[in-house]
Length: 400
Image 1 (cartoon, rainbow, N blue to C red):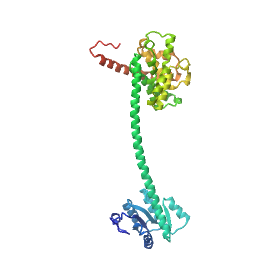
Image 2 (image 1 turned 180 degrees about the vertical axis):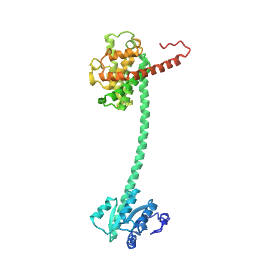
Image 3 (image 1 turned 120 degrees about the vertical axis):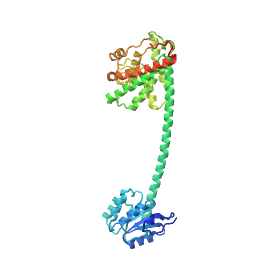
Image 4 (image 1 turned 60 degrees about the vertical axis):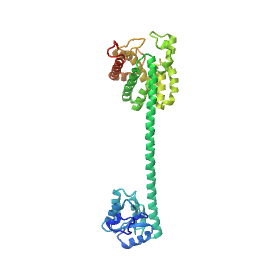
């Protein structure tokens, strides 16, 4: 479909030549417009306006296919700079290059033109070759920029889609890996004759205590993400017990010195197992798991094992897990002992009867006591419901 050339009426937006690029010439001098039309007649479809207001109307109607605007500065009603301002309001200066037409060759006028975002300046009288080069170059630059932006947008969409797909795959992989690790750790707990809820309580205790440490002691620079990973990784703290003989692991009485040395080895043996699982764990989870497994029995005064670490040489992740493990061991029934009351167990830890803990951690333990006890009671309730379902409501099952 062809457009008529040199349109000045409202119908110029309805007629278009597909094979030519459209430019708008805005000048109150008909002679100047005729000269410019003669220069561009073989290369462009041409629209005309003899004043600024008419130019703005044409820009609005023709902006979808307008390739460039040749705009005179000195015009009645609205000069070229006022037209520039209006075009700028609808954010078209980056999409349609404006080439200013002027007889003023001063540096001040040229500077003002460029400051307002024009692509180039054409001085009167017109030199056809220079005029054609400046217009074609301005159009090519905008088209190249537009093409580059389209490529970038397309690539960005593609990369975003690929990233989202990778994120989904990573989430699935992490869930599967976490499930594998959870099952392994649960097997350890069952072999140890401990409730499968032990790991859930340790997770909850570490999460609660970690949040208090994060808020009360900013010097540890903990983030919620780190607390969450620590809590997840705490499930690995006793994985090494799978290597301990039943005669020691399940012994109801006090362990001999030699037996205790074997029991202590669950920390280092657990690290060997965690290394073997490293390919199904992300980096942060692996590092926290390894550290917690090895050091959750270290004591703040240096009397723990296996490395005899002291004070802040023990990571806060291992400290959190260590206190959580001791507290749960005290308030839970074990093959070698009955469960202590929560108040009794709390007092034993605070008074140093279970070894020395970080004073800052003890302060957090005091603040977190109610939350930790509530978390414990919730798991005990679920455990009872599970056992009732397993044994049947009418059986003589006694959870005491």
